[in-house]
Length: 365
Ligand code: SF4
Image (tube, rainbow, N blue to C red; front, side, top):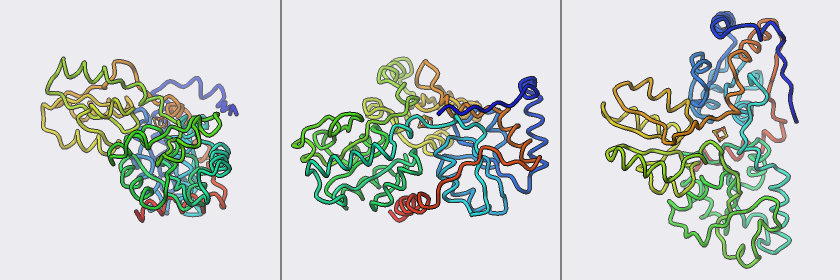
């Protein structure tokens, strides 16, 4: 569905400096009721206004602790705002600067398609009971998918605990279905020593995900065929080139990158792990980083004493998150100052209860 968000001519006439100045003024005016949350992948023009910065789950959990702020403006994507709404107190409202700021990877696993996959597996006799297949979903998924997982006693995972949660799921059931990111699932399975033959890619739109009943019976892990188009742009040849040109360089990549990239990098880890690795490195160290460009450029600005580069020669930007341009934040804050709540993201109570179960399961693991 195309959502039009027309601000009107007055906003389109503003230049960058005017927009930033007016956001600063509005932020001061609304300070006692407003909390601005910014994901690491947002552009610096927005990021400079962050009251809290971090990855999606960290932001939601920390924001929920600051319960005296009524409005949580989430400069991130839709699933992040949903998670914030699930964890927020009932009087808090979560707002997204632009409603087009979604995550294409999260959108690749819909509750309807995932439910259909489970039905097919039951009908084919791959599992006698739904409990035989433990669902695990990456936090980069819709609230509806988290609820599907919570209803089946599965768990959410993040890019920092994927292996731990996958191990828990393998201990719990005969098989695991991992949503929506093929690559985080495959990298986690590989780190646990699960053989390639036991891992199958479930191809959306194909009967039984494109596999025979026999192959599915032998598999231990099914991976939904979702992917992050930003992290898919990093290639093994980028790593090989850096290693030839700068043999002492440290290559660190995000686990949403394909396995042929992760397997030859020096290190891999979540956005928080990448930031920690760079922060803790010695002055003069050299880095090529395989993750979203705004984070890499920010690290380079913060560490002028280190040589920090994007791993790929092309721009790897989360363009949907970038829909949150400063002018939309200004428009949102102007409306709040005028008593109007725009772009609120809400999760239906019954979905929120089940989704919270899958998040709580992860915390228990
Ligand atoms: S970087 Fe990838 S996974 Fe993260 S929000 Fe953007 S599209 Fe989604």
